[in-house]
Length: 419
Image 1: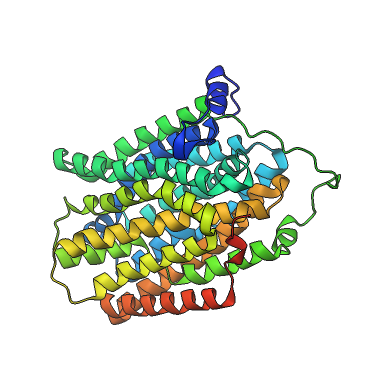
Image 2: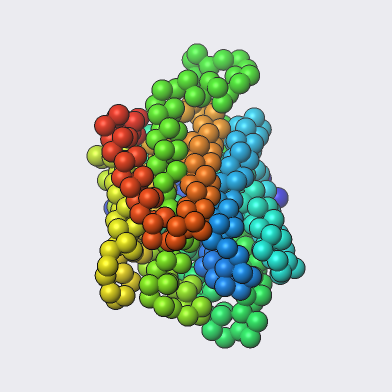
């Protein structure tokens, strides 16, 4: 199913991109972006209502929610390596990615059947398993479609389309909650239907990545221990350490939205709208920031994104009245953070990894970052439970500032410079 070679797939892969800032971006990137757009509508519908559903509706504590948010961020991170290895061994990036998309679609339906916090957590773990399987193969499909000098632009285009879904998902959840009697169940039902649509689009419009051209000195057989071999690449190793250190102090956006909701005293119906501003800024900034990263250095832009996240934390810590500054400033800072980190990190790593191990290499980096964010969410939830939300956010902000300074001084982001 996922290895379809239909004419639609061929047209999608071969259609030239528009002129201007999108010139040279192939059809495969646009097709994957549209699949991600639809899938993100489904995912963000659920994500937009989960914090209040779990903490206010099901009575989950901040520590338990921190564990669940960490699970959402990275508890299934090792499956990224599994997906990466299978994808590189079989050269079937689309099939592995499609399996991940299918598993996530099934989990949206399963949310209708669970009613306790930890049964919800089990379903979300399975959903993150699907995301872990699909992310590296999908990013490999993107990176293998463009030359090294255009990685930032290609990932920026994909992330912009992906973020359009993140913008529409909370709006859809808000609309469903506004009109439905049993709001949460209705959100999960619509989310499942949209996820199935994304899976169909992947099957019809995304073509399998071409096999890499053989190099002169290419070995006859794959490396027996590819992860160890990849970590011998100094640039990739530095990126992994940098992403892990900064990820340890990255406060999940769900926590930031909960803090913002408390400051603004918003009702549950309006809560899904908080991520909309973040998604709008991400959508507008993804392509320009990707192009900027290609020109001035992907590592520098990645570090700048974490400075934007620090700004969001400082806004929430500042003794400001609940007004326009918070409503606009926090989501905008989060949007810049995602625009400058998500695709940019993959664009920085892709040229460092041989094409035949591209998926595994990206998965190694994603795993390092996801495990660090998992630990960070656990620690933040524990700090909130023990000290309260304000002190917990202050400790995270100091840690983010110090880790960013350490990375800048050590030169750990030099691997992200464009070639």
